[in-house]
Image (cartoon, rainbow, N blue to C red; front, side):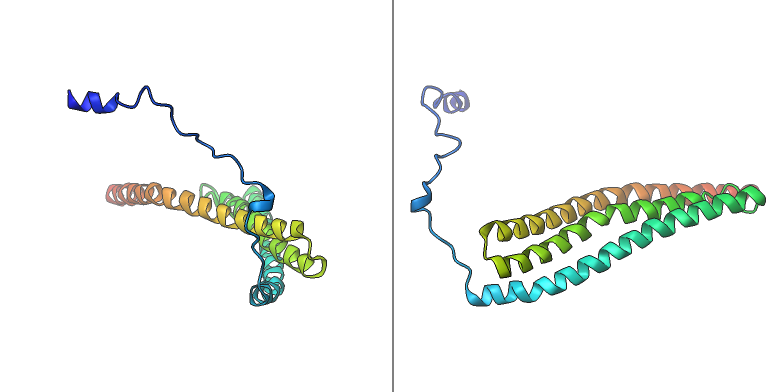
Length: 174
């Protein structure tokens, strides 16, 4: 009974507001970027653009290579029956899909570096906000990708064990 009395004790009281009212702009503390902060951001901008370009090239090569590999396997299996039942064309499509997935973080990294460089010359807050938005998007994408890969690990382990058992039975029959 004490549990229920404690549970329903606060029913008549008004609840505190869920979203506090916004603080007026004039009273908000102004956060300025110091010279060392700006130096590190400006120094990183060139490397971010460089790595972004490399990742974009890698992504394009994965897509192109995967598609060429899949088409090549399909053409080769049409003329000879050497590649039947191996599903190698799906491996090429998996590479193309991987390249398409990694296009997005490459774009975020490149845009982050580009917007920091743009801020360096314009000093507009919108450019820095856009740079930080791309940085946030990159890390959000990376976090989601990590969660997806971690969730797939048990599935692949089960499939690998099942494949090993089935291969063992196949070898035992022969």
